[in-house]
Image 1 (cartoon, rainbow, N blue to C red):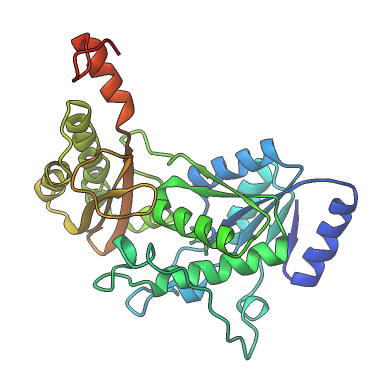
Image 2: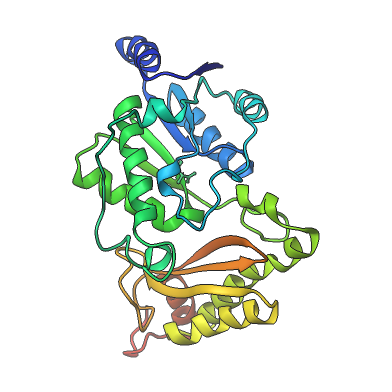
Length: 303
Ligand code: PAF
């Protein structure tokens, strides 16, 4: 594996592969790798010829209340983990390489960035503008055929997909399932901030999603009721809820009844650590199951 720090060197290196007709996969990251990152890299390895992983803690997506300097970093460990899953290039630019003096361009997706994590009462849409700004740059720098993102950051994946479509980036966006610890906690670089007690408390996020999913499979379709089921689990674990909301997977519009695929998304603070998680609630599968069990559909005909 080669570590490259400058844009011209990376472009020159990838140009050779392109001339040879090889496809390029990109896994954008902020480092401090866990199994979730490694699963994205493994998927890139399997599906593309040349795997580039970017490692850049992007300052423009951190809010004033978030501590950019405290974000966990360990490039040597990351490099060895990436090499272990067959990554070809670790692109690890410094801040001035990405944002040189005079840099003045923003990239903003409207609408879907203004709810959930982007709600002005929370992180605000500026967070996602920081993400789209750096991802747009990475797409232009690397020119990937396929880029890989995790479902844990469901809203981010949706925003990146929208940006790529709107700005005609010739890239396919692959979103891969959330990788979890054995007790259900979604893997995140931020889990390293948790004390032993907080680590235990943090399992409430996935337990809340499980409980809501069980209610959904049992036939509950009211968004309010499903949100209440999940919130109660967080409340019982004494976790400070930022939000628990159920929105349409497609465009994050509000849902009262889950009659289209829904995204049950949550953000909560465990101690001082902000964690997010989500679950997709699909309408059709359980409905088919219920119709089978009942033997008829609502209009009385066989399914
Ligand atoms: O998900 C992340 O780690 C970051 O938001 C990303 C996509 C690498 C952009 O900085």
